[in-house]
Image 1 (cartoon, one colour):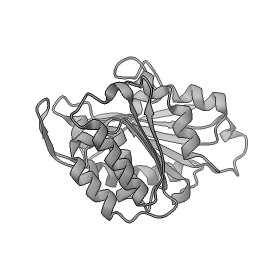
Image 2 (cartoon, rainbow, N blue to C red):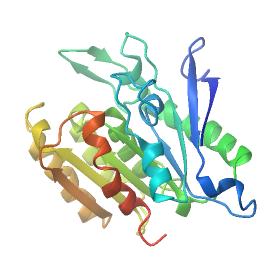
Image 3 (cartoon, rainbow, N blue to C red):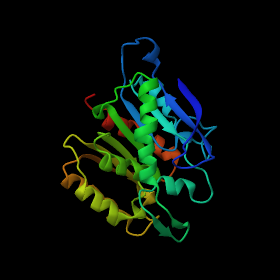
Image 4 (cartoon, rainbow, N blue to C red):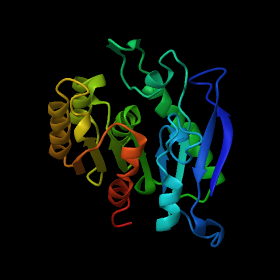
Amino acid sequence: MVYTWDITIPELTDTETRRAYVYLPESYDYDPSKRYPVLYMFDGHNVFFDSHATYGKSWGMKEYMDYTETPLIIAAVECNHSPNNGRLEEYSPYSFRDSRFGKVIGRGRTTMEWLVHTFKKEIDKRFLTLPDREHTYIAGSSMGGLMSLYAVLEYNHIFSRAAALSPSLWVDTIKITRLIQHAKIRPDTVVYMDYGSREMNFHSNMRQQFEKVASLLLRRRVMLDCRIVPGGDHSEASWEKQISFFMHTLLYQY
């Protein structure tokens, strides 16, 4: 079951209404004493329904969760669709300049503060969650992948595990590497990170950036599951094929 409702995020915009999504496993209604881990995901409109997805193709998370009977709640919020770099700004921890997008003001920290202090509190209040760090995860792709990596490092006291698919490391690799080097990372931190083989030429030095970030995570003793996806590209259809990989990593030994 996927519940949806409309929300506003005053910290990020005064006027835009966007949709929140919560997936509840089929077992949710059968045992009111049971509580569940929560996976927070970015780009909520692309997570469950093709009819809501930006390009007409979602990740198909509901079908996967129902088929596998995975005991997990998924909470996700639609991104900012403003043509004035709305999504980029909300999903970037750092300001940057790009030839395609111009100057982008990074508001990722504001986004995470809202997610941690407002949205997570609402989810924990309304649903049967396990709210502790051990059972709180985060995932996303592209800019959402960058945000997931940022979240598990900068907010490691909140999130114990993250999945970063095709993370947009090109935004500012130097600041990302500094964050990895200096973040307070607990020894039980788990990260799944991948990149499609067909994406490697999208940005200069992408393979080197990916290798550097992976190496630093290992150096910080993060339990890293890192893949180059054969034939993988930058699309929901490709990320859907990786669901079983990152879900097994996030839920390993749960």
